[in-house]
Image (cartoon, rainbow, N blue to C red; front, side):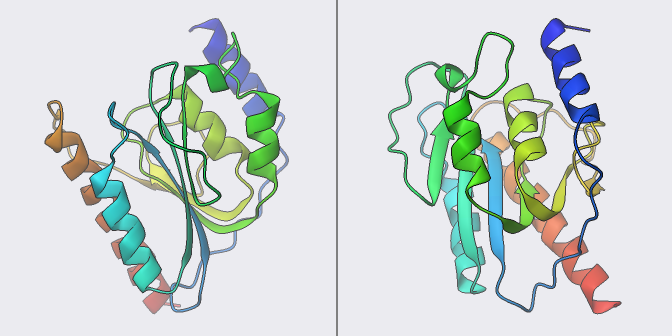
Length: 181
């Protein structure tokens, strides 16, 4: 186990006990989406997911991560892409990132990462959200876990299909569980 992973596990253990509140999708929600950005920072599939949530009268914020130092996308209140320069030597987000993250409270965090990326796991851990849902990566950050079928995507479009598939699974479960309340 790497030092960065040990530090993450230690900080995760120091987090306060969570008391998750299940979101009701028929009400306007404030939603945070975190995702792995494509190298060109276009993220068309993530933008279409955002549009779908906006049609449902939800307030959507998106934070992505890409493994490169220089980010070309502007930092906007509703959209941000983080890069390697936003994290310290030990893999933890820099203070300015944590400060920006702490300014908002969300009803729902949707984590669309499909592999264990430490930078996004930190964002998921530090996001102030009533309910956190994401893929089953075994880290204990989310309140509800989704499992993907066993397949390995190739570069480009395959990863976009996977994020959309994960989003559809998450929304399907949230809708089904809500309807059984």
